[in-house]
Image (tube, rainbow, N blue to C red; front, side):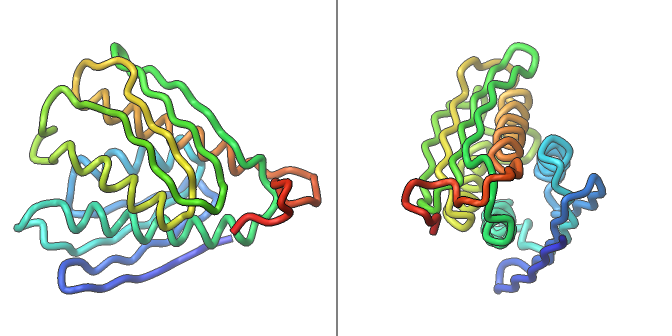
Amino acid sequence: MTYQMKRETKETKIAIEIAQSADSHIATGVGFLDHMLTLFSFHSGIGLHIDVNGDTWVDDHHTTEDIGIVLGQLFLQMIKEQRHFERYGTQYLPMDETLARAVVDISGRPYLYFNASFSKEKVGTFDTELVEEFFRALVINARLTVHIDLLHQGNTHHEIEAIFKAFARAFKQALTPTNDARVPSSKGVIE
């Protein structure tokens, strides 16, 4: 199944398509973010086709946050259609000297706990504070509960890469289809 959405503001023009495939094309105008989304796609098994024209001459904030918004909305569509999934996912992920943990609950209750102090404020031209902005936008719009912890620091690129990979694999685990006909909640509903 394929899900697609366009979003246009005075700051960004975004077109995203997601599918359960290994095929991806990512062009955000933010090189480091392209790299992280490519890793996310590979480790989650979700193909991403992303084209963005954003106001990166200002900075990368609007582009990064708005991609998180649209991806979150698309993930919510995918979750609602799938209906039967494991619900929970946990992943510890080392990236050389760094270690990240991501815990995902497809709960219908948006909440992000983000505990990561990065070694540097930038990776290339990318502001590291935008990592939290991206995940907050994604989590709120996908209606997920997510806890992300950077447990061991080191190279800043590795720190962020470990977080993206850990989240991707935890999300993939939570989305794993089940044969159980029940909604994965004792309430009988996830909204």
